[in-house]
Amino acid sequence: MSKGEAPIGLTIMEKLVGLIIMLIGIIIFWVTYTNISSIGSHPIIFFVTGLILIGLGIVMVTSKTE
Image 1: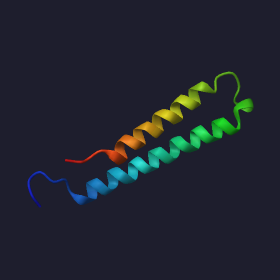
Image 2: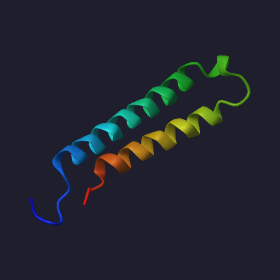
Image 3: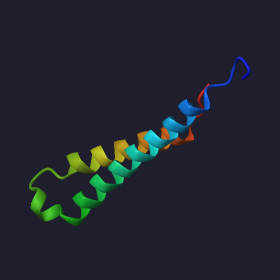
Image 4: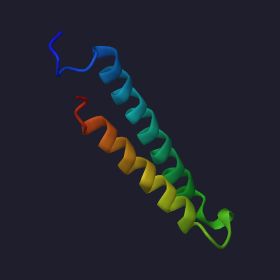
């Protein structure tokens, strides 16, 4: 292994955690969208939370570990 490379296990786990975070964000967004009438007066909180998690997951999947 050269000096500038990250361990392969770290890279795989980073991508896996990113996929899990993105999946949780998609589930939050979808459940909020399909049940918007039963949530009450503030569904925007759950929409924003889902979008933030989706964005964080995309960043983790596409980033390069060094």
